[in-house]
Image (tube, rainbow, N blue to C red):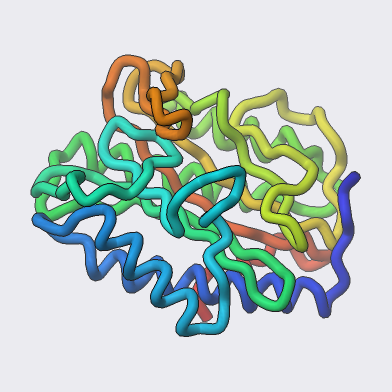
Length: 250
């Protein structure tokens, strides 16, 4: 069931997302060669709690951390560890969720560690731009999979692939709600978007194959060919005036 949110509820979801936006900004500054992903996780939890929120991911379905820290070929759900030390040339996807007063926020960015290759920088740029393409299509009356198709078309036209095994989602009083928001699809199909829907759109873009392996820890998803992957995510509200990005820092 898809829940339509009132203006009051949307503002509560925005408040949770503002915590996420602030944390991501601070994490972007903290990312540097020599820092471990476990240190980044500690920063994440501290910042969320200082702002009155609780980490949405920690304990969710057994996930052990506050931050999904996915380095290089890791697509999503990287578990922070003391022995994963960032090095110049890496890229890292930072996925943060927070709960505040019963409502959830969720967003992700991919950032470079020091100087990175032109190929890595281009992958990040295309992934971020594909998210913007999807958001621009999210108007009331539009079909959901038009959003998906716009992302897929933008990505594939530039020689990359979109992940099929993981998708975006509705969000509100639960971290994951209906509908699922894939990053591939046929334009003009799927449910019609309505004002009051709140969804997290999150393209995961691979440099090579879209195929995925999940490592033995049961969480860490990596590209099957071990080439780079990037991930961007915003939580948005569908409104009569168009899409509103709730996880964009005010």
